[in-house]
Amino acid sequence: MASGGHGVITTQGATRNAERLARIPDWCLNDTEVSNLIKSKFPKADKNPYQYKRAKLWAGVIYLYWRVGRTRGQVAADLQVSSLKVRNILRDIKHWRLGMRADGRGLLKKKHDTIHASVGNNRSF
Image (cartoon, rainbow, N blue to C red; front, side, top):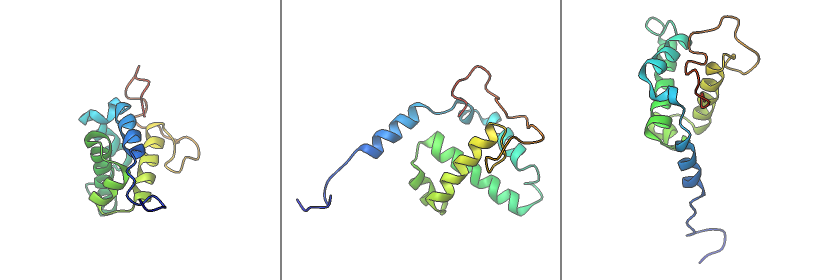
């Protein structure tokens, strides 16, 4: 076997993905909560093409990453964006669910309806 890891099969990534799938947040499996999240983040998506494009991307990430169980890289390939873009969207979704600004700097001035939508669920994200 050649040095440098060529031909070596590792399962570390598969193990991490399986662990992540065991902790899927309940809200992302609920169509109503996902819809409310998207509508609260992108309220003008029906009239604004930029918001529509971003809402569609968020919905695709939620569906592929949590519902289908694809990895960040697989989601990126499916949606034809970079893995970094998917990571940033996942971070932004987490911040929005917690009632924070998308950049993580403080709370939103106006709270939206989706904050802590799953009362009693410790796996809110």
